[in-house]
Length: 111
Image (cartoon, rainbow, N blue to C red; front, side):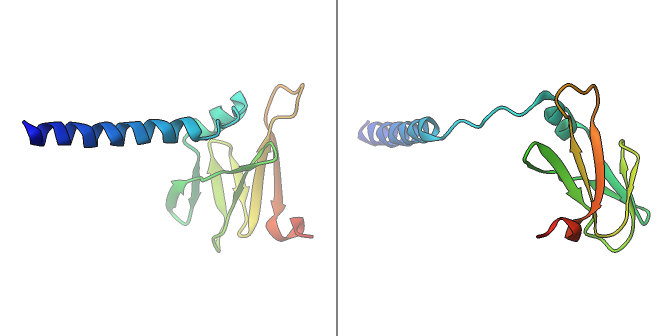
C-alpha cells in the first residue's frame, strides 16, 4: 500500500512538472496558409537518379531551399531545376493569387 502511494506521488509530480513546462512555453505565431500548404506538400529534390525530401528554411515570409549538392536537381512538384549551389525562394506576395518563385545563387545574397 505504501509503495503504491509513493509511486502515485512521483507520477503526480512528473505530470505537474510537464504541465507547468507547457504553460511556460511561448506560443508560436501562426504561419500563413500558403506556407502551411507548401510545408505539407511532398516536395522532392530529384537528381542523379535519386530523390530526397526538400527541407525548407523558413524566414522573413519566405521558404528557401538550397541545392548543396554538386549536381543539378529538379524540385517537384514545382518543376524548378536548381543548379548546384543555387537556391529556390518561395513566397506569396499580398494581393497575389499564386506563389512567387525566385532562383538565385546562395553566395549572391551575402553582404
